[in-house]
Image 1 (cartoon, rainbow, N blue to C red):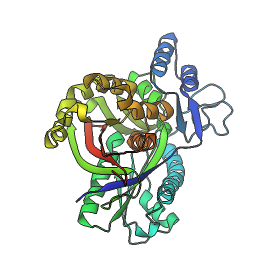
Image 2: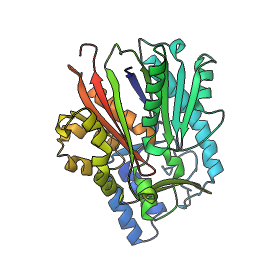
Image 3: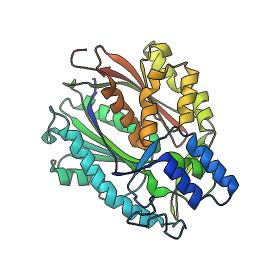
Length: 369
């Protein structure tokens, strides 16, 4: 049975800073010598990012709160508990806002039709989990089934889509609300290690929601065709996420783009073979923009044209890497770029701890296609 994404809504915190501004603040607060300052300057300047959003406003010296950057020029190190308390406060608000926007932006689905809520996040925890907050604040039925996917990282929107597809296949009346939210900026680390500096240079905050059913949408949307999962060999230590005493420690090694490049054929083989497709038949490549180098490697590997990666590069530039929510920003951007006069094949991919590579074939459709 087919399953469809009817619409996607995206939300970001009000605070944002240019990459150049953040680069200079990191050089000031974290760089402890000319060598580390040069490394910071190079990493930020070559990131392909213009700006990023955050729930924290003290990146500016005149910010009201002093969560990280103290006025005396030192970098504060909030405990994991302090960071998670702030996450719980801000995430509850953003989960509800994103869910409400997702429903309100769809003219053919009402909140009374929602049967399942799937929430996704890896940057904090609270219980009752986010689905409870959404149901309570939006007045959804108390019988709404809810599920939470945690600590899966940047690829987690794919398990959420597969779960929703299964629900839609099992019940033709199912209407599934999915919300992915990440507040990555809460886990800034006072460290000059390359892994931490790379992490600090790319991650931002954002949330995205989508409505999925087994019924064809009345507006432009996506058909969820097929998914594939693989794990890159001997790469577990190159992308990992652990809980420390002062926030979550993200390991993002410089080898990640090469690991992804070398494992692309294995990751995409099931999709290409099952549907007898060639890479040149893929019109849109909705790649999770984990970093500029990842997009560059994929573009080179498959000799892609600039337009085929326009949405991932645009989202990277305007928002950075928002972990699990990012791929939904890419898919929304792709929907808004042009109307689908006929069905268009979309290859979506994301990468996360493991190193896990999730991919899927989607079909961009319109009511007339």
